[in-house]
Amino acid sequence: MAPTLSVRLVGHVTLDVQASGDVAAQVQGFSVGLGKLSAAAAERARQLRAGLSLASFASARRPVEKEIHRFVRRLAARGLVEYSLGPARGGDQVVIEPQMPDYWPRTPRLRASDRLVLSRFAYLRRRADELVLESPRSGALFKICDPKVAGILAALATPQRIEHLRHRPGFPGLPLLALLVDCEILFRVAAGDAGLRPTEGDDSLVLWDFHDLLFHARSSEGRHANLSGGVYPYADTIAELPAVRPRWPGEAIDLRPASAATAGVRPSPMAELLLKRHSTRDFDAVRPITLAELAQFLDVTARVRSEQDTTLDLGGGDLSLTYALRPYPSAGAGYELELYLAVDRCDGLPRGFYHYDAGAHALTPIEVGGAALDATLAAAAIAMGATGKPQILVTIAARFGRLSWKYSSIAYGLILKDVGVLLQTFYLVATDIELGGCAIGSTNIEQFAKLTGIAFHVEGPVGQFALGRGASPARSG
Image 1 (tube, rainbow, N blue to C red):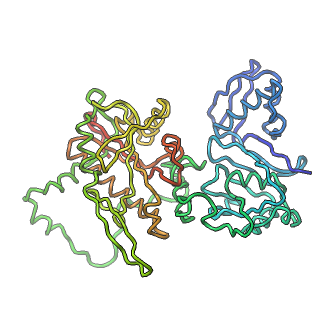
Image 2 (image 1 turned 60 degrees about the horizontal axis):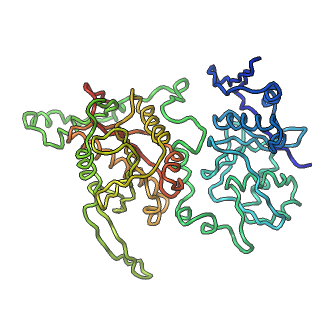
Image 3 (image 1 turned 90 degrees about the vertical axis):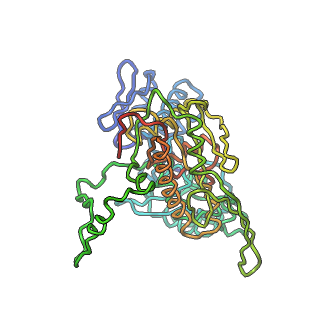
């Protein structure tokens, strides 16, 4: 008998269905309104505690089926449901935990002659006392409840025909394989294809190492459902490390007398900038940044200064390379970082979303919806702990292939080092021209992908900086 795919509420969620038909989800003491349901639909919705077969409302032919389908979609968009696959009467084979709000389980048609293989980005790991299957490319995580499934997955390290898999002990059935194909944890290969890098996706994906793509997806928001940011996860178990490291044993050389010798000397402009630098989270509501100031900021920090061609001898022939040099240092002079500006208020520049063309020193507008722009600016305000939106939000994106084409194992780490250098450059230049700025530690890679239409593994955000005229008095940090 084929396993059943069902949807159910996640463990910490309960539904509150009123006699009036108003429905709300109770989540850790908070109430989330979900609209109204008819009496018949409300009765069906109560079954979501134990699980409701997706097939029972998939056709959406009857009014109650349409109503339940819309209701479950609303729950899914808020991350309040999970999906289970298993026998109609029995335990779970797998539990599917969405990692993105728009995930919906799909089962593409598979044929017995199809050859499947595991993605090189897929991995099994222990989570507490559970075994989970994940991939940074996947919109869902699979909790493996049946150990026999793990054996089948191990066999898929090399391409296998489905008709041969059927004869293996513990074959999980076509629905699970189809779900894994839909999530890009498994993929189809042609006969004779070993499923190596060039087979699995576009050229941009070929350039990624496993650990780099995983780090990018899991250290940003948008493609996982884990808590992130300043949530103090270990405050109850481990004491905070001291702000200043305890001294090493041995006799220290006191530098204070040497510093005192120059106490009367005026600090250099650079030293003054470093002393004045601070994070500005609140911006002047009356006097926004001007287009001239923005142009000066971008000119000094990020404009291409020159281009150079060079030839590299790799032993098997010459390799021609081109570099576009900018004011800040970059790993291998790769200069993989691009700037995108979400503009809320700038005197002389219409509100909108722009790409900064560093070669031409120009801003190119990118058409986005007003709601998407508002959401981007609002997320930045929340991340900063600010009372209002930044006047301009600069998103630092990376063209990942620019560095991974050259570097192995360290490409993503080098990108993050470049981001740190550029953020300090932003701070110092903003301070010098009497503007305010604040680096933002979190970015949403899926939100950026929707704004630009660029796949998250091709070009994506790796840093953000709020820019504008600081409110007075400035908040610092």
